[in-house]
Image 1 (tube, rainbow, N blue to C red):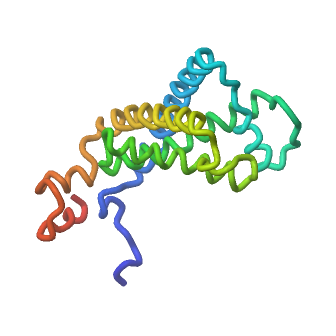
Image 2: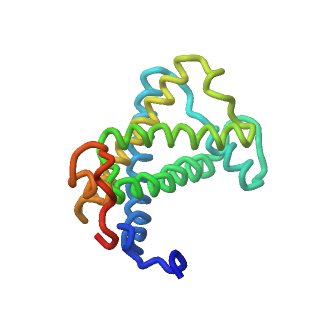
Length: 189
């Protein structure tokens, strides 16, 4: 019966590609999180902006952990901060494995990173929509999330490139640009 059984690799992806995307994404996302945090610490030293406790508060709300006023526990803050960075790195790795690589893909991923934060912060009632923030805070947040996205992207792209071009890149090599007369790659190709 057509469509009931899918041959692994028939569509350009395989269990091996998925495993690579997982471990490479966790690594890339963690690297992006580390560099973003270093940048935040440098920026905070220059601007005097205090550290954020929003990640810990979101984690407390998501998991039902007890909430407390004021400064939040550093382990909870780091668990959410780095956990979110690592897990989102898997998505950027999937992009790289598929052939969505380079600065444009990292710019697209910046939007994903910002959106993920805002969904979690707003759904838990910990944060407010960015349109309500002071412009300076918004600029700083976007800058730090862009650093995360581009570092994560550079690592994910470099790791994915070790296995050659992704299916999207192979398709683009057939004829640059979008053309109605260029069909998909052959199955298994």
